[in-house]
Length: 375
Image (cartoon, rainbow, N blue to C red; front, side, top):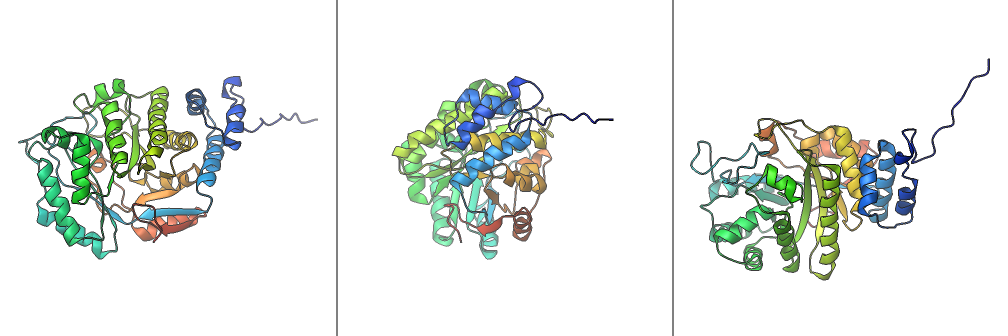
C-alpha cells in the first residue's frame, strides 16, 4: 500500500491559512529593512514560535554578533513603599499613613549597598513609591551621600513616574529635576512605570499615574541632559496586541529622535503582569506569550542595542529559552526584589547559576556594568 505524504509547509508559512504567511515580513528582516506597525501586528498573530525565534535571532546577531550573553551583579533597593497612586495592578504599595508603610533610613540603605559592594556588585536599581513626604532635596542628599561612600556603584535609579512626581511636588521643570539629580550622583534612569504606553490601558489600570506622553517626555529630557535609560513593557493586563505594537512604536520613535541627544535607551525589558493579590486580578500570561512578545520586540526595535531577559517574572528556565528569541542580556542578579514578589512571583538566581544557564544554552556568559561595558 502506497503511503500518502504531505508536503511540509514552506518556512514562515503554516497550514492555518494565508493570513499566517509571513514570508514577506521575513524577507524584510533578512534584508535589514525596518518593519512597520502592520507587519508587527501580523507577527503577534503568527502561531509559529520557531519562525519568530529565527527572525529575532537574525536581528540579535546583526546587533550583537558574538555569542555572548551579559549580566550585571546588582541590587534592587525599594527605598519606600508609600505611594498615593493606588495602581490596580500593584500589591506592593501602602497609601500614606497605612500600616506597613516604610521609608528606609539612610543607614539601612548604606547597609544594603555595602552588602552589594562586598560581593563585587556594581549596579544599584533604586525605585520606590510616590511618597508625598519626599521632595527633591531628600533625593539629592541621598545620592550625594551614596556617591561619597560608594563612588564605584552605578546609580540606575528612579523611574519616570517617580521623577515626574518629584518634579511636580518640588515645583520644578523636568530639565531642572533631572539636571539636579544627575549633578547629585544619578547615572541612568530605569524604564519602570511604562506599563503600556497607551492611555486607554493606563487610564484603566493606573488612572492617577502619568500619561503615556508624560512618560515619554521624561525619557526624552533624560536623553537631552545626558542620562542613558532603559525601556520596559508590562503586558498581559487588559492590553491588546495592537496596543503592544503602539507601545513599541513610541519607543522606537523616541530612540530615533534621541540620536540627536547625548544619551539614548540602552535596553528593552518586557515582563508580564503579575495578578496575585492585586485589585485588578486576572490571569498570568503564559510562557508562549512571553517568548512571542520578546521576539517580536527584538525584531521591531531595530535601534535598541540590547534586549534583557525577565527571569524575575518568567523564571530562570524561560529566561534561558528566551536567549534563542533575541535576548542578549540576562539582567541583574537583583539580590533583593520586593515589588513583583508581593504579587506572588518569587525567583532567586545567584551569579553562578546565571552563568550555568547561559553556558548550557550555548553562549558565553560575561559580567557587565550598567553601561554594558564588559568587566
